[in-house]
Image 1 (tube, rainbow, N blue to C red):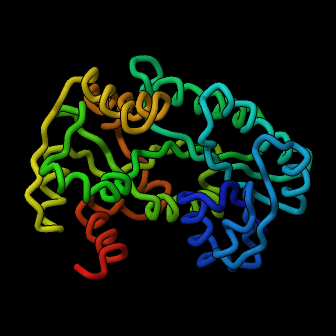
Image 2 (cartoon, rainbow, N blue to C red; image 1 turned 45 degrees about the vertical axis):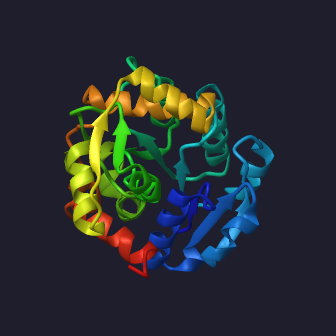
Length: 287
C-alpha cells in the first residue's frame, strides 16, 4: 500500500509522514511538496505537487493507494479550488482513499470563521468524491505557544482575548499518530473525528508552562479589539485577523469540544503537560 502525504515539507505533513514511515516503511510513503528539496530530510521519494498545479498533481498521484490531504495555508477563498485539484487528481489516478486534515472551530461568529467554512466545503467535496474517506478535525496546536515562550517570558504574561474559555489543545506529533491509524485502517472510513486533547483555559496553560519551565507567567485577558490590533501590527492584516479570530473562538467555546481522538488513534490523547514536557525535551536541551 503506497500512501502519499501532501505538503510533506510542512510541519504537520512532515510529522504524519515520519509516523507513517515508522508504521509501514519508507518505501510505501511518498511525499508531495511544492518545493521538493524542502522535504528531502524525510528520506523518502518526494514528488513535486503544488496545490495550484493540476498537471503536477496528476503526475504526483500515479500509483498511489491513499492520499493524505493537508489543508492548505492560502486565503480561504483560494483553498477550496486548491483542495479540489488534489481530490480530482486522486480520482483520475484511481486512488482509493483520501484522508483530510480539517479543523475544529466556529463557522459563523469570528474572524476565523471563513477558514473553518472553507474546510467544511472541502469536507463536503471529499464526502461526494466517490472515494473512501476519513476526515479529522484538528484542535489547535500547542506548539505555537511554546515557540512564542521567549516573548511571553519577556512580557511576564500571556495576553490574548480568550478570557476564561477553554481550548482542547493537540500537537502535531499526536496528530501524526492519529492520522497514521486513519490512513491505514479501513474501520475509520466514512468517519469524522474531532482530534483534540483535554480542554484547558489560558490561565491553566500559563500554570502548566510555569510548572515545566520554572517561569512565572500570568494570564492577562484583553478585548477582541485590543488583541486584534496588536496581532495585526505584528503579523499583518490577514494573519493578525485570523489569530485574533481563533482566540475569540476560544472565548466562545468553539475549541472546547468532545474529542474522538481515542477512537481514531486507539489510545488516549496525551495530557497538555506531557506535550509541553516533550516539546521542552526536544527543543530546549540546555535546560
